[in-house]
Image (tube, rainbow, N blue to C red):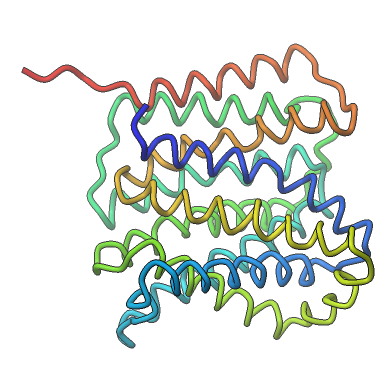
Length: 291
């Protein structure tokens, strides 16, 4: 496994902890905008310190390229979270998660037209296996989907916005920007957007006790700063479609954490789904022999 695949895999694993932190933040009384603000604000502090220590030139961008970062910060990060959380209120968590993982489809289709990434056999097979695996992991077919037109709209919207992070990041990388620059401006614009939606009013809830502060800091560090840093780095060495499929390890991790931490049940369908996702990651990264 090369370092780029490992980076994306690690990012997906960390994103899989989001549900745990979200439940903890819910217990503190944070709104959806508040959760987004806390995640992005803590990540912004971490990325700012990282840029100051490693390369201050990473703060520099050209005004004509600002749209790339508006795409990653507002269109992807902010809208993705809002759409996903809204979808979870309109349908079952499993159905919302399945619709979210329409993202690899969007990534591969958009990348085909924008970056001429080919639909290879391994990526196509991996994509089908990953989507099927996510469906089984999330309990597809249990009769509790609660589908509605509005729910499908927000669910697919979350998948599209999730996918667009890879797309806008690729545009920025192709223009010579480092992953540090992309992550800094993504978190900056997402923080500003969440603040404008009233998320900043949730800050007092995050400092009401030492434990609340630890939860808030952990949310930003483990579900935003680290995974976005590793995922964006992974994009520097992987095609968008392949990276998106590898990141589908996220619902597997979420399911396992639910089993361990919240004593949620795990049936044969879930286990089969986990194996399918893991197999999809292996298939996607198989290299054909060249003479």
